[in-house]
Image (tube, rainbow, N blue to C red):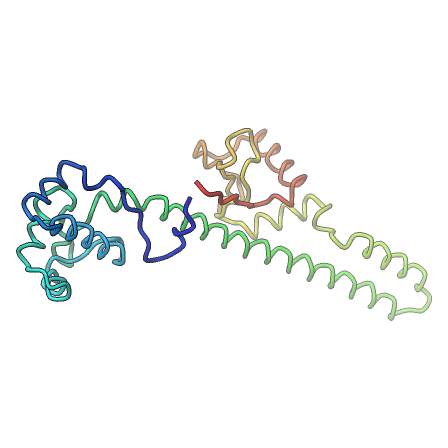
Length: 246
Protein backbone atom coordinates (compact mmCIF):
# COMPACT_ATOMS: atom_id res chain seq x y z
CA UNK A 1 0.00 0.00 0.00
CA UNK A 2 1.34 3.42 -0.94
CA UNK A 3 2.51 5.54 1.98
CA UNK A 4 0.58 8.40 0.40
CA UNK A 5 -2.52 6.89 1.99
CA UNK A 6 -1.40 8.63 5.17
CA UNK A 7 -1.93 12.01 3.46
CA UNK A 8 -5.44 13.33 4.11
CA UNK A 9 -5.64 15.13 0.72
CA UNK A 10 -4.38 12.25 -1.43
CA UNK A 11 -6.54 9.94 -3.56
CA UNK A 12 -5.64 7.29 -6.18
CA UNK A 13 -6.23 8.02 -9.86
CA UNK A 14 -6.67 5.39 -12.62
CA UNK A 15 -4.05 5.97 -15.33
CA UNK A 16 -6.44 4.75 -18.05
CA UNK A 17 -9.43 6.87 -17.02
CA UNK A 18 -9.33 8.76 -20.33
CA UNK A 19 -9.94 5.49 -22.20
CA UNK A 20 -13.22 4.65 -20.48
CA UNK A 21 -16.18 4.97 -22.82
CA UNK A 22 -18.07 7.29 -20.51
CA UNK A 23 -15.04 9.56 -20.24
CA UNK A 24 -14.64 9.58 -24.00
CA UNK A 25 -18.25 10.72 -24.22
CA UNK A 26 -17.60 13.52 -21.70
CA UNK A 27 -14.49 14.59 -23.62
CA UNK A 28 -16.45 14.60 -26.90
CA UNK A 29 -19.33 16.64 -25.46
CA UNK A 30 -17.00 19.01 -23.59
CA UNK A 31 -13.79 19.18 -25.71
CA UNK A 32 -10.49 20.78 -24.91
CA UNK A 33 -10.04 18.66 -21.80
CA UNK A 34 -13.06 20.28 -20.12
CA UNK A 35 -15.01 17.03 -19.66
CA UNK A 36 -12.00 15.19 -18.27
CA UNK A 37 -10.79 18.10 -16.15
CA UNK A 38 -14.15 18.84 -14.54
CA UNK A 39 -14.71 15.15 -13.72
CA UNK A 40 -11.37 14.84 -11.93
CA UNK A 41 -11.85 18.24 -10.30
CA UNK A 42 -15.18 17.15 -8.81
CA UNK A 43 -13.54 13.99 -7.44
CA UNK A 44 -10.86 16.14 -5.85
CA UNK A 45 -13.56 18.25 -4.22
CA UNK A 46 -15.35 15.15 -2.90
CA UNK A 47 -12.09 13.72 -1.52
CA UNK A 48 -11.83 16.62 0.89
CA UNK A 49 -15.46 16.49 2.03
CA UNK A 50 -16.82 14.50 5.03
CA UNK A 51 -18.03 11.08 3.82
CA UNK A 52 -16.93 12.12 0.29
CA UNK A 53 -20.21 13.91 -0.52
CA UNK A 54 -21.08 17.48 -1.52
CA UNK A 55 -24.38 19.44 -1.44
CA UNK A 56 -25.84 20.36 -4.82
CA UNK A 57 -27.18 23.61 -3.35
CA UNK A 58 -23.56 24.83 -3.04
CA UNK A 59 -22.55 23.85 -6.57
CA UNK A 60 -22.66 27.51 -7.60
CA UNK A 61 -19.85 28.21 -5.12
CA UNK A 62 -17.63 25.70 -6.95
CA UNK A 63 -18.57 27.20 -10.31
CA UNK A 64 -17.50 30.63 -9.05
CA UNK A 65 -14.30 29.34 -7.43
CA UNK A 66 -13.14 27.39 -10.49
CA UNK A 67 -14.52 29.85 -13.06
CA UNK A 68 -16.57 27.12 -14.72
CA UNK A 69 -20.19 27.65 -15.70
CA UNK A 70 -22.80 26.08 -13.44
CA UNK A 71 -24.50 24.24 -16.37
CA UNK A 72 -21.20 22.52 -17.22
CA UNK A 73 -20.79 21.29 -13.63
CA UNK A 74 -24.40 20.11 -13.58
CA UNK A 75 -23.92 18.30 -16.91
CA UNK A 76 -20.78 16.47 -15.79
CA UNK A 77 -22.40 15.38 -12.50
CA UNK A 78 -25.65 14.20 -14.09
CA UNK A 79 -24.69 12.78 -17.50
CA UNK A 80 -21.72 10.40 -17.57
CA UNK A 81 -22.05 7.96 -14.65
CA UNK A 82 -19.10 9.24 -12.66
CA UNK A 83 -21.40 10.73 -10.02
CA UNK A 84 -24.68 9.87 -8.32
CA UNK A 85 -27.32 12.08 -6.72
CA UNK A 86 -29.22 11.23 -3.56
CA UNK A 87 -31.40 13.09 -1.08
CA UNK A 88 -30.68 13.52 2.62
CA UNK A 89 -32.15 15.60 5.43
CA UNK A 90 -29.70 18.32 4.38
CA UNK A 91 -30.92 18.31 0.79
CA UNK A 92 -29.64 16.81 -2.46
CA UNK A 93 -26.03 15.59 -2.43
CA UNK A 94 -23.73 14.07 -5.02
CA UNK A 95 -21.04 11.41 -4.60
CA UNK A 96 -18.67 9.48 -6.87
CA UNK A 97 -18.95 5.66 -6.72
CA UNK A 98 -15.60 5.47 -8.53
CA UNK A 99 -13.87 7.63 -5.89
CA UNK A 100 -15.54 5.72 -3.05
CA UNK A 101 -14.21 2.45 -4.44
CA UNK A 102 -10.71 3.86 -4.88
CA UNK A 103 -10.70 5.10 -1.28
CA UNK A 104 -11.53 1.71 0.30
CA UNK A 105 -7.83 0.85 1.06
CA UNK A 106 -7.40 4.25 2.72
CA UNK A 107 -10.50 3.79 4.89
CA UNK A 108 -9.43 0.27 5.92
CA UNK A 109 -5.94 1.55 6.75
CA UNK A 110 -7.48 4.27 8.93
CA UNK A 111 -9.61 1.74 10.82
CA UNK A 112 -6.63 -0.56 11.42
CA UNK A 113 -4.56 2.34 12.72
CA UNK A 114 -7.38 3.37 15.07
CA UNK A 115 -7.66 -0.18 16.41
CA UNK A 116 -3.88 -0.42 16.81
CA UNK A 117 -3.94 2.84 18.78
CA UNK A 118 -6.69 1.56 21.07
CA UNK A 119 -4.77 -1.67 21.64
CA UNK A 120 -1.60 0.24 22.44
CA UNK A 121 -3.51 2.28 25.03
CA UNK A 122 -4.92 -0.92 26.58
CA UNK A 123 -1.47 -2.47 26.84
CA UNK A 124 -0.11 0.66 28.50
CA UNK A 125 -2.98 0.49 30.98
CA UNK A 126 -2.18 -3.16 31.75
CA UNK A 127 1.46 -2.29 32.29
CA UNK A 128 0.54 0.54 34.67
CA UNK A 129 -1.75 -1.76 36.65
CA UNK A 130 1.04 -4.33 36.86
CA UNK A 131 3.46 -1.70 38.16
CA UNK A 132 0.92 -0.50 40.73
CA UNK A 133 0.40 -4.07 41.91
CA UNK A 134 4.12 -4.63 42.31
CA UNK A 135 4.49 -1.36 44.20
CA UNK A 136 1.60 -2.25 46.48
CA UNK A 137 3.11 -5.65 47.25
CA UNK A 138 6.51 -4.15 48.02
CA UNK A 139 4.96 -1.54 50.31
CA UNK A 140 3.00 -4.22 52.08
CA UNK A 141 6.15 -6.19 52.76
CA UNK A 142 7.96 -3.05 53.94
CA UNK A 143 5.12 -2.26 56.35
CA UNK A 144 5.41 -5.74 57.81
CA UNK A 145 9.16 -5.26 58.27
CA UNK A 146 8.62 -2.02 60.15
CA UNK A 147 5.81 -3.32 62.37
CA UNK A 148 7.77 -5.81 64.41
CA UNK A 149 11.46 -6.49 64.90
CA UNK A 150 10.65 -10.04 65.94
CA UNK A 151 9.42 -10.84 62.42
CA UNK A 152 12.34 -9.36 60.50
CA UNK A 153 13.59 -12.65 59.14
CA UNK A 154 10.14 -13.76 58.05
CA UNK A 155 9.35 -10.43 56.45
CA UNK A 156 12.63 -10.37 54.55
CA UNK A 157 11.75 -13.75 53.18
CA UNK A 158 8.41 -12.39 52.00
CA UNK A 159 10.06 -9.34 50.42
CA UNK A 160 12.48 -11.57 48.55
CA UNK A 161 9.58 -13.65 47.29
CA UNK A 162 7.80 -10.57 45.98
CA UNK A 163 10.91 -9.26 44.27
CA UNK A 164 11.43 -12.61 42.58
CA UNK A 165 7.88 -12.39 41.24
CA UNK A 166 7.78 -8.77 40.05
CA UNK A 167 5.61 -9.85 37.12
CA UNK A 168 3.10 -11.70 39.28
CA UNK A 169 0.23 -11.11 36.92
CA UNK A 170 2.15 -12.91 34.20
CA UNK A 171 2.38 -16.09 36.29
CA UNK A 172 -0.91 -16.13 38.18
CA UNK A 173 -3.53 -17.31 35.68
CA UNK A 174 -6.58 -16.23 37.66
CA UNK A 175 -5.18 -12.76 38.23
CA UNK A 176 -4.26 -12.58 34.54
CA UNK A 177 -7.75 -13.65 33.49
CA UNK A 178 -9.50 -11.16 35.78
CA UNK A 179 -7.24 -8.37 34.56
CA UNK A 180 -7.96 -9.15 30.90
CA UNK A 181 -11.72 -9.42 31.46
CA UNK A 182 -11.82 -6.04 33.22
CA UNK A 183 -9.48 -4.21 30.84
CA UNK A 184 -10.81 -5.57 27.54
CA UNK A 185 -14.55 -5.76 28.22
CA UNK A 186 -16.38 -5.52 24.88
CA UNK A 187 -12.99 -5.19 23.11
CA UNK A 188 -10.82 -7.48 20.96
CA UNK A 189 -8.05 -8.91 23.14
CA UNK A 190 -6.06 -10.97 20.64
CA UNK A 191 -5.82 -12.36 17.12
CA UNK A 192 -5.01 -15.94 16.17
CA UNK A 193 -5.76 -17.63 19.50
CA UNK A 194 -7.69 -20.34 17.65
CA UNK A 195 -6.82 -22.09 14.40
CA UNK A 196 -8.32 -19.46 12.14
CA UNK A 197 -6.65 -16.82 9.97
CA UNK A 198 -4.71 -14.28 11.99
CA UNK A 199 -7.23 -11.53 11.20
CA UNK A 200 -9.83 -13.33 13.32
CA UNK A 201 -10.23 -11.63 16.67
CA UNK A 202 -11.21 -12.93 20.08
CA UNK A 203 -13.31 -10.37 21.95
CA UNK A 204 -14.21 -10.22 25.63
CA UNK A 205 -17.97 -9.65 25.96
CA UNK A 206 -19.52 -7.40 28.59
CA UNK A 207 -20.48 -10.59 30.45
CA UNK A 208 -16.86 -11.74 30.49
CA UNK A 209 -17.22 -14.47 27.86
CA UNK A 210 -14.97 -14.90 24.82
CA UNK A 211 -16.50 -14.14 21.42
CA UNK A 212 -15.12 -15.30 18.05
CA UNK A 213 -15.32 -12.55 15.40
CA UNK A 214 -14.84 -15.19 12.68
CA UNK A 215 -17.89 -17.29 13.53
CA UNK A 216 -19.72 -14.40 15.26
CA UNK A 217 -20.50 -16.70 18.21
CA UNK A 218 -19.40 -17.13 21.79
CA UNK A 219 -16.64 -19.70 22.17
CA UNK A 220 -17.64 -23.12 23.40
CA UNK A 221 -16.22 -24.14 26.81
CA UNK A 222 -13.49 -26.19 25.12
CA UNK A 223 -12.63 -23.36 22.73
CA UNK A 224 -12.59 -20.87 25.60
CA UNK A 225 -10.15 -23.05 27.58
CA UNK A 226 -7.93 -23.30 24.52
CA UNK A 227 -8.08 -19.54 23.89
CA UNK A 228 -7.32 -18.65 27.52
CA UNK A 229 -4.40 -21.08 27.52
CA UNK A 230 -3.04 -19.52 24.31
CA UNK A 231 -3.38 -15.97 25.68
CA UNK A 232 -1.75 -16.91 29.00
CA UNK A 233 1.19 -18.51 27.20
CA UNK A 234 1.50 -15.75 24.57
CA UNK A 235 0.99 -12.60 26.60
CA UNK A 236 3.51 -10.70 24.51
CA UNK A 237 1.23 -11.17 21.49
CA UNK A 238 -2.00 -9.88 23.01
CA UNK A 239 -3.80 -7.52 20.70
CA UNK A 240 -0.91 -7.01 18.35
CA UNK A 241 -2.15 -6.05 14.87
CA UNK A 242 0.22 -6.36 11.97
CA UNK A 243 -0.69 -3.42 9.73
CA UNK A 244 1.08 -4.37 6.54
CA UNK A 245 1.26 -2.63 3.20
CA UNK A 246 -1.14 -4.10 0.67
